[in-house]
Amino acid sequence: MEIRSTHVGSLIRPPELLVFEAAMGRGEAYDEAAYAETLRTTVADVVARQDQAGIDIVSDGEYGKANWISYLYDRISGVESRAIPAGETRLPPSRDRIAFPGAYAQHDKEFGRALREAEVPMPAPSVWVCTGPVTYDRTALDRDIDNFKAALQGKDVEGFLPVVAPASTYWLENEHYGTEEEFVYALADALAVEYNAIVDAGLMLQVDDAVLMHECDSILAEGGSIEDYRAWAQLRVDALNHALKGIPPEKVRYHICWGSWHGPHAFDPPLADVVDLVLQVEAGAYAMEQANPRHEHEWHVWEDVKLPEGRVLIPGVVTHHTTIVEHPDLVADRLVRLAEVVGPEHVMAGTDCGFAQTAFLQRVHPEVQWAKLEALAEGARIASKRLS
Image 1 (cartoon, rainbow, N blue to C red):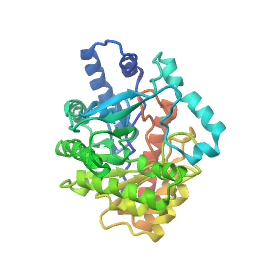
Image 2 (tube, one colour):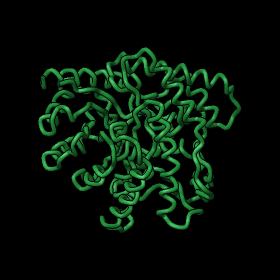
Image 3 (tube, rainbow, N blue to C red):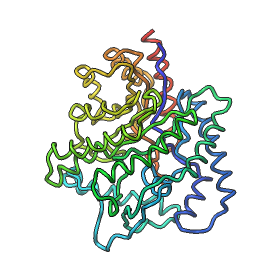
Image 4 (cartoon, one colour):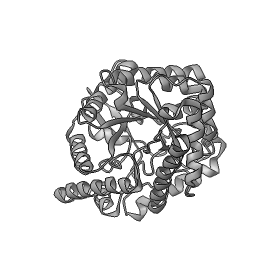
């Protein structure tokens, strides 16, 4: 039985691409034709590198996006960015931040280091606001699809594109729609354009939904209840299924995580408490963290929870949370123990989260990123032999 390998999507951008991202971040003019060519060639390079690492199902590295969430706000109408008054913050409330203030003060100080090194000014505190009807402009998406499909030519790999879920269209406040439900479903309708375009292009669709998990901590930090959180989440799961309507589940991967930042994560909701929400999503595969010390034990959840027929789990078996490169035998152990619970045909090898959720953010050094992906692929091959 072959255990195939993949990852979550975002990969560290190369220096030649960051030159253009830096100019954009500074608001400077840049050579658009040169950027387009650099984007095309770097996507080709990153696809080839994944193939060489032995990854079976690859992405474009999210090279055409500056940020895994806010890329959407450049592609939809009816939204605008507004400065936040001095002294205010729009960071989501967090019991983790309350419990570990010193750790997060250090984290926040280091967060902008890459921007400073690139001489890109830290963005002024701002919030995105919906002020009119939301519609989707496919221009940048079609460019990304074209670049990715060209890079896949001649490679014995499959391709997926990661895009955001309705629940994770974060830092976007509603001033236009009459109700929260109307607002969320309008976002879902816009995202449906994106989702269908990816599938119609012959690619796998991955829906990224980190905020669905993290919002539990935020709602509880504000004094809300688990019931309040579940009502918030249920609306957005329903809206996601609305956006996915008509797309075959086998063309969809649903990725959840508890946030990629290097923090304590002591208040992450247990998978057992939210897995029913996850399994409601009409996806053929579910990708989630199971390689870091906070969530590795949660493979046991599947001893008690039945995976729906025909669905696949993509556990993280290497993680961005540490610079240590996992041994391939450990990767294989993680895959085999899960396969023995749900069946080898229901398991694929993946990563906890991406390695660079924004252009100037890298969770590990590029050399470590590629070593982890190689260990992932080798571990999947070892697991396949053990399960034969």
